Length: 459
Image 1: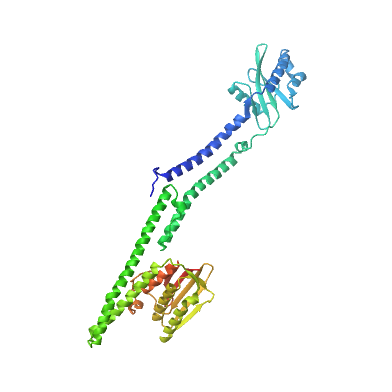
Image 2: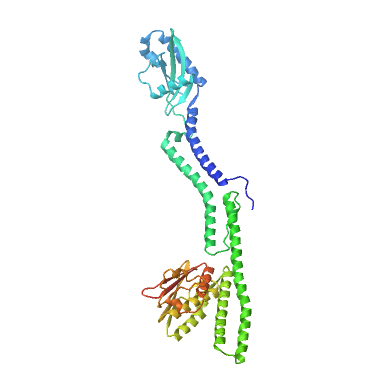
């Protein structure tokens, strides 16, 4: 396995993701006022500078006549002219004390512009929302310093992004949304492979030993890719170990049959020679029990080894036909009644032999412990088929045993089990067959008595 030399790649992705996201938002919010300022402030164009000089020359002549000329109609006409585009331009004369001497109504924009021009220490223009102000041009009259500013009532179009600078609340909302989208993209990038890994782990835990993480995740160059490769390696080891264990059980069971066959042959020869005794009867009984247990072990190993065999779409009634006939005959021989309610239209992908064996084991248990009646029903939905087997027997006294009865060699200490033979392998085979179909099986007690086993299989 190739391990990247760059450590903490997930850490780096998280760091860069959140850092870039926050930096981008801060940069946009911070640069908007600067962009607006640079756009609104500009050097004084030559035609506006010439206009200031021309008006200053005319005004200086009038100011030489004394302060009384300021209120004359001729002076007011000098400060109200039109530019080359025939737009009205108004001029403001400011004395050395910063007072506007030709108007009593001074806009807030002009006051702001005078401060900005004083800081800039150079003539300039500034585009406000509904007016363009330019200047100043300084000139002397009789030793007194004056400045002249121009105001052009005009609205120049701005770039679209200045709209955000003027609408702070909207800008903040969009910044939050953009931040959420970027963080969501990062979370999706990191969360999707983790979800794939979790699903593969869940499938492996549920018994699907073939479950592996997809190549898109294992090909990643970060820790998630390394984790996916490690998971697949672990899954391969687990699958090999489990299969080896099942093969070992199967091989041991096969090997045990050879000395068992010899034992049964020797016992038959002894009986043929008239060497019949209570001891030989006991040996024969135990040999038969051992033969049945080995057959059960082989069946359990076979079901688990073939858990991922290809399923075929088969009618449920067709799969269980022989099993149901045998169970009905067995129940009638014991004076009990088997009620069957399975729709002929129910079909599902199955491995017929393991499923039939699973239902057969459940029905035999139900017939053995039922007092009078056994029920088997099957219902189908869009996604699953539910099979329910009930009996009116004593049930299982200990609730904890209900969850453990499907474990191999587990025999709960209840009246239901003490009366039976067997080795606790029948229900384990049933559970293995249901797992092979990616289904689930649960048992619960009925009121006032009886046991219900519910099987759910994907349809």
